[in-house]
Length: 80
Length: 292
Image 1 (cartoon, chains in turn orange, brown):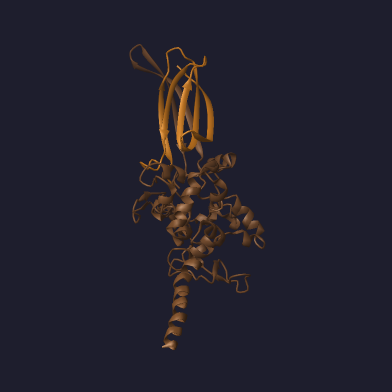
Image 2 (cartoon, chains in turn yellow, cyan):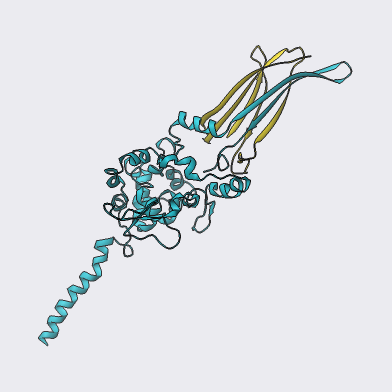
């Protein structure tokens, strides 16, 4: 399973991207009764009033073989 | 003297017939071993059950149990291992059962066959003969006979079900409580490292996760509850059904996202805008994800 988080400015410029891999080899798998929580702190260029955040969870049993699981988009206002 | 010679004349062909009979009956292997790939396919062919159990057969036909050597989207996964690495062979004829440790779960009936059957299988795999390879499966007899009993060996003159059916056509059905038990699935789904082979393989550990992570934390459902509801032999997920698999995973792994945008003053006059994204994935399944 792969969790991808990206943040883009209103003009489409990519400001941030990060991925978390949940896999059995190192047992970072998602365990029953133990939710996986992640926090991403994204620095935003001064003056930016809003960013678009895209969160994608995919299942990738083999490289290049991608099953979409969740696709969530949020607009985040940067309050002074 | 004549009587002695006649006896010899009679004894010699009789002895010859008796000594060669096993070869005719069972191929070149040990007594009872399956001697050809065709025989392996025929002996475990589930289509004979279809007539009376059509609905179950139709469900099973869509499952990965019906194509355990075919991997995702019809890809014969063993082709990779027979071409590269410790299980590889220079020619299919060199292959023996030792080249197929994966058969422990993907085709357990192979271990009832001779090495020449393994060579035949290797040839079919390496020529990408999907028609032949797709006929090798985890069919009715594998689960309802071979894997249906763990204390002692299953009877060859019976098959096993969740209830007894004495007048079942073909072989009588004996009751096996194991069929409803997670251990039944655990025989294959999660054996971890298989160190008994000449070339050990690390396989899925899903049943271990069920035992050590799900049950101790209060989980109470069985594999069959979730993967065979109402005895559905489709045994989801079906990874070739991409939309269905995505929906299945979406249900098993709810994702919550929280966001916060703010500006903080790190030092006098210096402002740092930040967006914070918090994600939380909950696993509602009875085992870790991913696993196998």
